[in-house]
Length: 125
Image: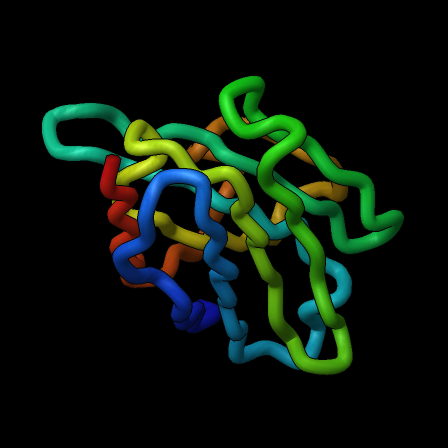
């Protein structure tokens, strides 16, 4: 099992920015698809973004497209989520996830094998 540690969450005003980081404890990080999800109380975990390990292809949920950017640094075994133009509805616990399945992108939580502990993002209006 790969350990994932998120950081970078916090409180920000609407319109502000945050950058989340997720460090992975694996030497084969570059081969894995990484994803970001978010969850609010009483709701299911929601796909935010994903990036493949092979080609670096990316995918975004419609709600964040044009505002969020996912990237990865394979030398540092880290994936990032840059969040701009934040809105109160972006408030959630954000989780990073890693998939050891076949290469590709998927918005389904079931595609991912390992999860971080989550980091709280709160956007005030």
